[in-house]
Image (tube, rainbow, N blue to C red):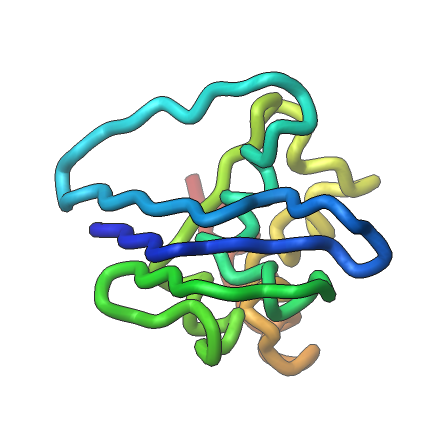
Length: 133
Protein backbone atom coordinates (compact mmCIF):
# COMPACT_ATOMS: atom_id res chain seq x y z
CA UNK A 1 0.00 0.00 0.00
CA UNK A 2 1.18 3.52 -0.72
CA UNK A 3 0.01 6.72 0.93
CA UNK A 4 0.47 10.23 -0.38
CA UNK A 5 -0.60 13.33 1.53
CA UNK A 6 -0.43 16.70 -0.19
CA UNK A 7 -0.81 20.01 1.62
CA UNK A 8 -3.32 18.55 4.11
CA UNK A 9 -4.89 20.88 6.67
CA UNK A 10 -7.82 20.20 8.99
CA UNK A 11 -9.56 22.25 11.66
CA UNK A 12 -12.28 20.56 13.70
CA UNK A 13 -15.68 22.22 13.64
CA UNK A 14 -15.96 24.74 16.47
CA UNK A 15 -12.17 25.08 16.89
CA UNK A 16 -10.02 27.99 15.81
CA UNK A 17 -6.61 26.30 15.67
CA UNK A 18 -5.94 23.68 13.02
CA UNK A 19 -5.27 20.12 14.19
CA UNK A 20 -3.19 19.61 11.03
CA UNK A 21 -1.56 22.30 8.94
CA UNK A 22 0.03 21.85 5.49
CA UNK A 23 1.09 18.21 5.98
CA UNK A 24 3.01 16.62 3.10
CA UNK A 25 4.03 12.98 3.29
CA UNK A 26 4.74 10.14 0.89
CA UNK A 27 4.94 6.53 2.07
CA UNK A 28 5.93 4.05 -0.62
CA UNK A 29 4.69 0.48 -0.83
CA UNK A 30 6.70 -1.70 1.57
CA UNK A 31 7.99 1.25 3.57
CA UNK A 32 7.49 1.35 7.36
CA UNK A 33 7.15 4.56 9.32
CA UNK A 34 6.68 5.47 12.96
CA UNK A 35 4.28 8.28 13.79
CA UNK A 36 5.20 9.85 17.13
CA UNK A 37 4.31 13.06 18.90
CA UNK A 38 2.96 14.57 22.06
CA UNK A 39 -0.66 14.19 23.09
CA UNK A 40 -2.74 16.57 21.02
CA UNK A 41 -0.15 16.94 18.26
CA UNK A 42 -2.46 15.57 15.53
CA UNK A 43 -1.41 11.90 15.23
CA UNK A 44 -4.94 10.54 15.59
CA UNK A 45 -6.32 13.27 13.34
CA UNK A 46 -3.83 12.31 10.63
CA UNK A 47 -4.85 8.64 10.91
CA UNK A 48 -8.53 9.65 10.63
CA UNK A 49 -7.67 11.52 7.42
CA UNK A 50 -5.93 8.43 6.03
CA UNK A 51 -8.72 5.99 6.91
CA UNK A 52 -11.43 8.37 5.68
CA UNK A 53 -13.17 9.17 8.96
CA UNK A 54 -12.13 12.74 8.17
CA UNK A 55 -13.86 14.20 6.15
CA UNK A 56 -16.61 11.53 5.98
CA UNK A 57 -17.59 11.42 9.67
CA UNK A 58 -15.88 14.36 11.40
CA UNK A 59 -16.90 17.88 10.41
CA UNK A 60 -14.52 20.75 9.97
CA UNK A 61 -12.47 22.74 7.49
CA UNK A 62 -10.57 20.28 5.27
CA UNK A 63 -8.14 21.10 2.50
CA UNK A 64 -5.46 19.20 0.64
CA UNK A 65 -5.46 15.64 -0.60
CA UNK A 66 -4.91 12.14 0.77
CA UNK A 67 -4.42 9.26 -1.68
CA UNK A 68 -4.22 5.65 -0.48
CA UNK A 69 -3.27 3.01 -3.04
CA UNK A 70 -4.37 5.34 -5.83
CA UNK A 71 -7.75 6.08 -4.19
CA UNK A 72 -8.53 9.68 -3.28
CA UNK A 73 -9.89 9.51 0.27
CA UNK A 74 -12.07 12.58 -0.15
CA UNK A 75 -15.05 11.37 -2.11
CA UNK A 76 -14.44 7.65 -1.51
CA UNK A 77 -16.99 5.74 0.54
CA UNK A 78 -16.01 4.49 3.98
CA UNK A 79 -17.06 0.98 2.95
CA UNK A 80 -14.58 1.06 0.04
CA UNK A 81 -11.81 2.59 2.16
CA UNK A 82 -12.33 -0.12 4.79
CA UNK A 83 -11.28 -2.69 2.19
CA UNK A 84 -7.85 -1.05 1.77
CA UNK A 85 -7.14 0.72 5.08
CA UNK A 86 -7.10 -0.84 8.53
CA UNK A 87 -6.43 0.94 11.80
CA UNK A 88 -4.99 -0.56 14.97
CA UNK A 89 -5.11 1.84 17.88
CA UNK A 90 -2.41 2.26 20.52
CA UNK A 91 -3.97 -0.28 22.89
CA UNK A 92 -5.15 -2.96 20.48
CA UNK A 93 -6.27 -5.25 23.31
CA UNK A 94 -8.97 -2.73 24.19
CA UNK A 95 -10.36 -2.33 20.67
CA UNK A 96 -12.95 -5.09 20.87
CA UNK A 97 -15.15 -3.97 23.69
CA UNK A 98 -18.58 -5.38 22.99
CA UNK A 99 -20.42 -7.25 25.70
CA UNK A 100 -20.34 -10.56 23.80
CA UNK A 101 -18.37 -12.37 21.10
CA UNK A 102 -21.16 -12.16 18.52
CA UNK A 103 -21.21 -8.35 18.70
CA UNK A 104 -17.40 -8.24 18.43
CA UNK A 105 -17.53 -10.43 15.30
CA UNK A 106 -20.29 -8.24 13.82
CA UNK A 107 -18.18 -5.11 14.36
CA UNK A 108 -16.19 -5.60 11.13
CA UNK A 109 -19.13 -6.05 8.74
CA UNK A 110 -20.97 -3.18 10.44
CA UNK A 111 -18.04 -0.89 9.65
CA UNK A 112 -18.32 -1.83 6.00
CA UNK A 113 -21.78 -0.19 6.10
CA UNK A 114 -23.42 -3.44 4.99
CA UNK A 115 -27.17 -3.99 5.34
CA UNK A 116 -28.14 -5.49 8.70
CA UNK A 117 -29.23 -8.83 7.18
CA UNK A 118 -25.82 -9.18 5.48
CA UNK A 119 -24.05 -8.32 8.76
CA UNK A 120 -26.04 -11.07 10.49
CA UNK A 121 -25.32 -13.58 7.72
CA UNK A 122 -21.57 -12.91 7.79
CA UNK A 123 -21.45 -12.99 11.58
CA UNK A 124 -23.23 -16.36 11.76
CA UNK A 125 -20.96 -17.74 9.02
CA UNK A 126 -17.81 -16.58 10.84
CA UNK A 127 -18.95 -18.00 14.17
CA UNK A 128 -19.81 -21.34 12.55
CA UNK A 129 -16.30 -21.41 11.10
CA UNK A 130 -14.74 -20.88 14.52
CA UNK A 131 -17.03 -23.50 16.03
CA UNK A 132 -15.78 -26.00 13.43
CA UNK A 133 -12.22 -25.60 14.70
